[in-house]
Image 1 (cartoon, rainbow, N blue to C red):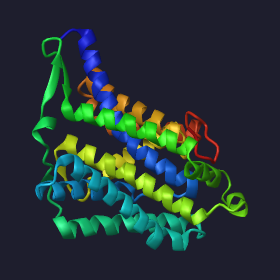
Image 2 (cartoon, rainbow, N blue to C red):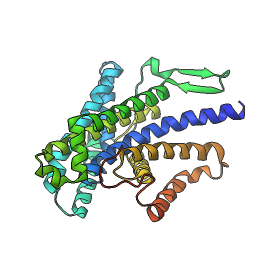
Image 3 (tube, rainbow, N blue to C red):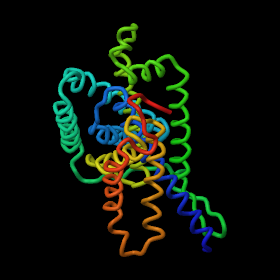
Length: 300
């Protein structure tokens, strides 16, 4: 493998990992943009989507349909969480909403442990997704699951861009993110907008959960913790509350992690996460608005 082939292989890996971070970060940014709430339960919604897919797959349902059901289950979980946990404290102080978000996180994780135990379970993939494509006499490898991850991420994110900018509901979400009180005064159904924001964000979490589990090969109740933290860093880098910032931050973070492992000395690799969170601190200190310096509204 020559230098160019090695770099190209790492770029493929970075795009695949960055796509996962971007999907999770986008969901965080949608909820924060509309409600100004950091939804720490977002990672556990990933778990709901992944476990639903596994259960239905083991029951004999085709993978594509099981994955779709997993995304729907995650969206429904987001709907229930908003109605039961977040709506009653919508106008409460920030610390109350933060603690409620953490409480929902632990409740979902413990429900997952009660239902499935804390032991990792295998994530079954169809034979089609277990294969790979090789170029340059095997120097460059595209696994089928990486191809699926990149393709579904691009398509879903393009679909989100169309939804936010071209549909009445999407424009309503942007208006509510700009000024919730003014949106209510002009007749916008604020409750409906917030519910839709949670459902859309949770659907993206469900998709990310399925793809994350498919790449890892296992599912467990605590599986959403690491991608949530990394997506939070990505959202801060891009600009919290900015959808386009979440995309930029997600792909930047994916590239940073892959390139640290691929191009820096082996002695540095164990400190990859420390480098990532040092970057978070640097952004919070010197550019707290993120790369795109968003205002309070959802942006694309």
